[in-house]
Length: 84
Image (cartoon, rainbow, N blue to C red; front, top):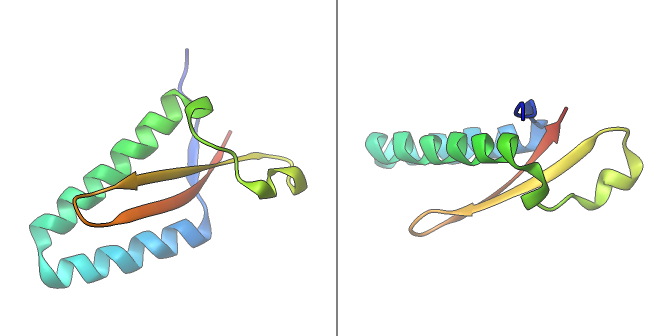
């Protein structure tokens, strides 16, 4: 099965950018690990999108949007991603 194309929605990208900027200021190596975890979660979404919940807004749009929720040692992150 071919993986789906995953597109980071605007709000999710803003969240990633803000979290990454905060992490870089405290631990550049930690920021790299966190960003790798984000990319890993997106890769899992591309391979198996049905394992992630749809967002409530799916009823109002012509495309499918799924939430990714993952945790690191201390924090949680939720991002919304478009599948096509």
